[in-house]
Length: 160
Image 1 (tube, rainbow, N blue to C red):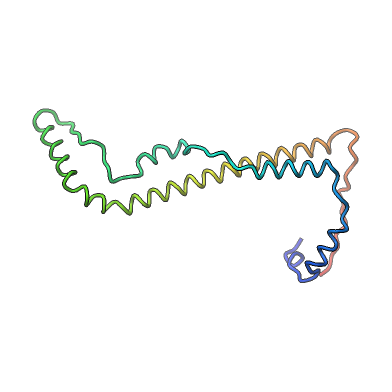
Image 2 (tube, one colour):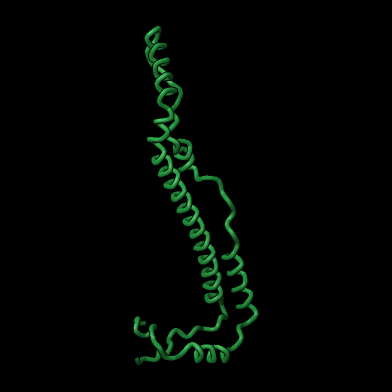
């Protein structure tokens, strides 16, 4: 089918609505199948915890707060260095917070976007699995012995 076949001013919406009223009613099996498919698609996804691949990043998203001050040096030098680090951090923490505020906001928004993408991908995988199951069921019905052969050739109305 070509795009110009789809985009048209004729027939009007009213004419299409009139024609759809003339369509035969679907079988109860088809209605039930459609109802099951729609119910499966409309079920809200269950809330899940953060994905494992984002758990570690989530713990590190606030870069304003560092690990406790340590030093690999032993003795008096190591102790003095740890005390100097603590004093520096205590003195300059308000400035550190302000400098890194935008970075923290960016980290939070990136993690939220990644979590959203993960949820969307999970939902699409669930939907595809449901579609695949439905198609396999339909294929099994078609391949079942005694199933009426389907007409593969369809007449297409050509014209503009």
